[in-house]
Image 1 (tube, rainbow, N blue to C red):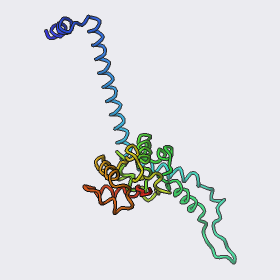
Image 2 (cartoon, rainbow, N blue to C red):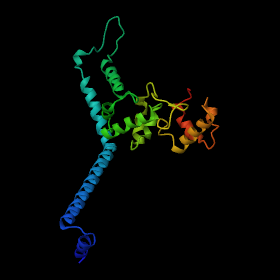
Image 3 (cartoon, rainbow, N blue to C red):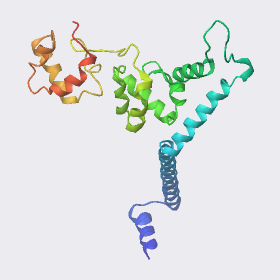
Length: 239
């Protein structure tokens, strides 16, 4: 019964032909299939992210990396000096252990302001999606000035960042500053800066002129100091 009503409404009320009705039905089915497929892909992506942060995954990955390093430096015992006798004090060779430790440190010491996508993907738990997010967020910030900012990347596990925070450094740090006295509206954007606060400062600058220092900036009424303190490493008062 309802099919007849729908057909009557489409055919005679809206004046649609049989071909138009079939075309609309085909389009609806196609859009429904596309929606189902996109949801399925999103589900699979989330499952991969969840698996990448499971403790068993971490443990397995770290064990495999350690075994790999051991194979590289597993020199035959006959090639390693063991104990020297005579006038010299006896000592045991530490060539294997020192070389392995140096290599392990080199692998994990990463400049988060210089690392490219391949460097990030090589780390356990960081796939192409997270590598892309880290690079995009770094570009929006203008560079990291402290390692803890990695925790601000959307979806990045805080536990992962805390476990490896000592293995990262910021290198030269910030590479793009926010010039508060000469930036126009398009340039006056930053992840830490809300629209309303940016608008307040730009309007004040238009009426009163350039800011000389932080004290001048605090003269702006309704200024949120917490926001600007967080942004302060990126600010430049150059004319």
